[in-house]
Image (cartoon, rainbow over the protein chains, first blue to last red):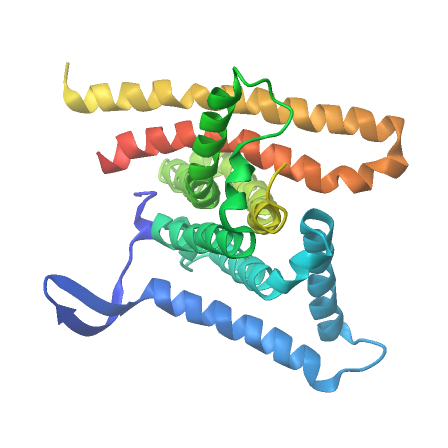
Length: 248
Length: 75
């Protein structure tokens, strides 16, 4: 029982080999496509009828829209709504990937740091490019807080720059590590069940405890999956708010 | 000492850092709950701040977990 085995990337369909790098359709790509298809089905199915009194599917779509829109408006202001497509896509993509990953025998795409780093760098560069495009050199004010005595200003600026640069690191590692640690914990407790079961009848009686814990941990993982998607989205909103209103 | 054993010990020591994040997250949620019970009508407006504080605090614990995972599986 290797708890890391579930994160293995398998080549499902080799496509090409360029230099020493193999390009293939992997299980990671497959689950990303499944998540995309689920989101498309939800959104297209919800908006096809467009009833005044929403049905169940339309209510889910409207609630998720309102949820993200309220978060974005309260953290980045009304101007932030121009970034709504980005934030909503990120939130729905990560949410669906996280929730699919809880189902046994599926693959958790967000448990790979390459995916989360790509998403976090997308947000980071959006903030930097939009910030410089909108404010020009005034964007540097973001790192120079006003009302600080001049003799500690260099130190504060240094800390601000450092915290700005470490944002993509913590933004990506948080999602990745939460998913990874949660799934390893589930697998370890699942391993206890089989280990105790190998001991015979008394072992099966004892295995009830880790089995119950696995069920409880799955419920906790569902909470973590939704919470981490929300945290990723709200941090995106806060970082975008910095780009929209540069300077403290 | 066997390098493998040193790695395992190092990973265990790295995990101590997560305790600090645990204290921090507990403080954040505890204070939020205390304040929310004093003034329940204002609590909903601070939910985004709660999650932001939680995320920033948790990041530090996650960094030490990352070191432990790197020691165990990557290096």
